[in-house]
Length: 109
Length: 114
Image (cartoon, rainbow over all chains, first blue to last red; front, side, top):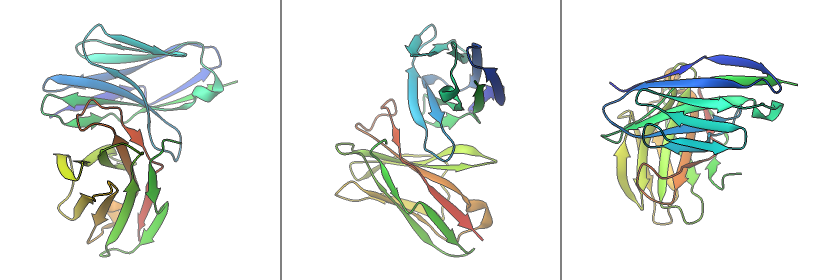
């Protein structure tokens, strides 16, 4: 069975304190790995799609990387507006989409 | 604002009842996806429709059904409701039907079953 594990569950950062979130996965062949941001009471917002090991994508203070067994979401010099829950999802070869439980990031000014 | 609309925002009902959730995709999007998000199970993919046809099925219970109409809006029907069905139900839409298409999520419908 496909499994997606995100760590840590929660992360408290000071503004400007860079950190990384982890998404490790076990899947029967990876077709794609997705990162989403979700604010409380709202729907997820798409951030990145990664398709193959070694791929990296960047958007503002966020950078996502992918290896054969895990993905990292790096947050560089975060600001309070980066506070949110970050979700990782993997799409397997048989087109099943599985989400992790998320990492809740709180950035204090 | 993603451009995806969902109604109602909140729904409170009793066990055993049936409810219908509605979703209008972004203009031009042909695919609609339904998700359930609960505290204990996280975000779970339920089902996808593309241009009126079922395209992919996830962890959708037999008590649940969905359809996509010719105007591309979609409805998710939940019947014989149980306490455990209380959750946030999200709809998302995308231009294409392939799983790699970027999905845009609506604001969700919060269902409470008492």
